[in-house]
Image (cartoon, rainbow, N blue to C red; front, side, top):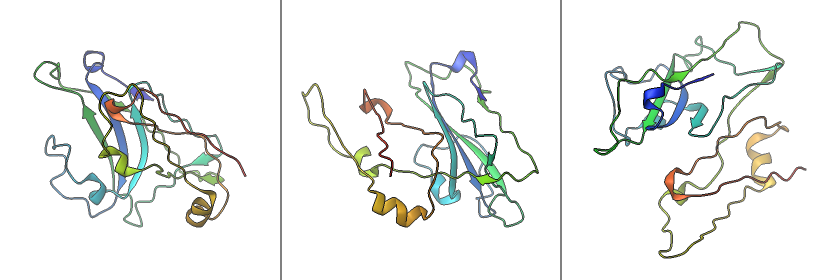
Length: 176
C-alpha cells in the first residue's frame, strides 16, 4: 500500500525501498541526506519503486520476496524518499508518507526479484535544444537477459521513471 500524506502530495517525487545488509553505515537515519548520497553502495537490493502516478506493487499470491536476516544480507529495510522542493515549493510539513510492507514466514513457491534495465547514460545525455520531440530507444537483447537471468521469468510489475526530462515512456516486451 502506498501512503501519501495529503499536505505533501505536491512535493513527494518518488519512494524507493531497499533491502540492506549489515554493512550499512551506522549513521544512516540520523537525518536527511543530499541526493548525491551513496545509497547504492550501502544497499545492494532495490526491491520497490514508486513515483508520482504509480500504484502499489502487488505480488501474485504464489510469489514472495525472500528476505533472510540470518545471512546478513537483509538486516535493514530502508525507505528512500525524494522530494521536488525549492524556495518557491517548500516541504509543507514533516512527512509521514510511506509504504506498507506485508510479510509471512510461509515460503512461497516462486521467489520474486528485481531487474534494472535501461541506459544510465541517458541521465546525462544531452537533449538537443529547440526540438519538439527527441526519441531515445534502448534495447535489451534476449541474448543478454538469458545470460544474466538463466531461467525464464514472469514479469508482473514495472517501474518506469525519467524525472522531468520526458513526456512519454513505455516498454515493449517481445516474448520468446
